[in-house]
Image (cartoon, rainbow, N blue to C red; front, side, top):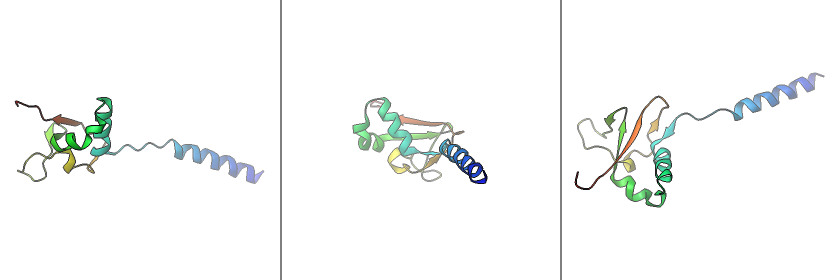
Length: 94
């Protein structure tokens, strides 16, 4: 009987662990999803070189007063679920 209770508890614990969701994601993963939706995943390298990143309404910069960061420069930056991330693709003619 004691072993049955332990087995049931282990099964419940393993179900709970499997239901955990990773909430923080990297810019690279999110950009990959963004391009997949637009059916442009094959162009990842090209677009990551010319797409800017906006976090919570402000363009991300590598230095305080430096140039805006491109996706390729911040691929591993972690985004939390409560942050708003936007990709700003370069548009010809500005």
